[in-house]
Amino acid sequence: QVQLVESGGGLVQPGRSLRLSCAASGRIFDIYAMGWYRQPPGKERELVARITNDAITTYGDTVKGRFTISRDGAKNTVYLQMDSLKPEDTAVYYCNSVHFGVQEYWGQGTQVTVSS
Image 1 (cartoon, rainbow, N blue to C red):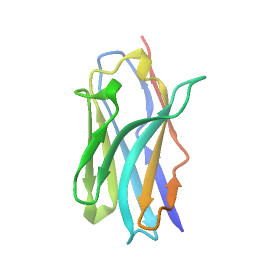
Image 2: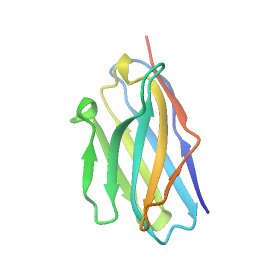
Image 3: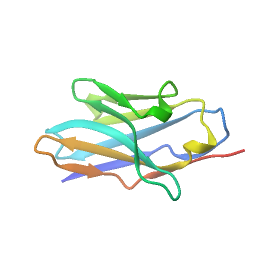
């Protein structure tokens, strides 16, 4: 019913920046919020950032001050600007949509690797 397609992942050096995109299509009229989660190797999935349809943002503690989430409503797209990247940011990053009626959808994920 909803398709989420992430893009922008890749290999970057520590201290550099990367911008992720997530495009939503399908049943998008009842989206309440969209966000990014990540799962480092061998660890649990964790919140990176979330933005509601009234533009309220939430960030995980480990990325505050370095990452910024934004939304392009006309194109049903959310972005994650990642600055000052660290090796511990290495993870698979997943796009998420939350809908009125408590439904959730997930993208396939995009790999971000921070290494020298």
